[in-house]
Image (cartoon, rainbow, N blue to C red; front, side, top):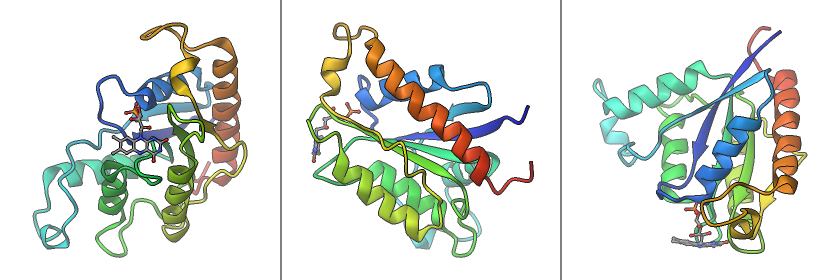
Length: 188
Ligand code: FNR
């Protein structure tokens, strides 16, 4: 059985983040053919091309190395002001440089957005896709996933996700496992 590795990037650093909770549920629900590994992005210094010299920040080097070792990427993002939170955009920018050495090129990805609002982070989801087009990241089209009114999807604050949401997430992550297997540039 071929097993793909996905790096999971979450666009919220908040301790009680809904996006983190959804990412943890996805990790638990992933099929055997896909292992999901959280990739820390909160400690990446803000991208500044001047620092990308002979000794770039260690956090950038480690992040780039980690992302080079995974077959695909899963983005779980909140929406900030109808767009992608800075922390996630920064990780994308750090991974995209030095010029010609982007860790994103050809790596399949999926996007899921999560919000307490009704629109489910649609704006962030699609702004993120805009960057992924430029970075040559084939991004799963269907199923789309906009998780709206997320606070209502838990039994209680701090409680478990409801069964309907778990089924929805399972469909999404199973779909991604199959789709990433078809689109990976790793020789299988
Ligand atoms: C938000 N929030 C928000 N929500 C939304 O649906 N659309 C938006 O444009 C925004 N804009 C926004 C800007 C900023 C600066 C903050 C801090 C928040 C609310 C946001 O969805 C909410 O705080 C979520 O709980 C953030 O996700 P986590 O941290 O729970 O994962």
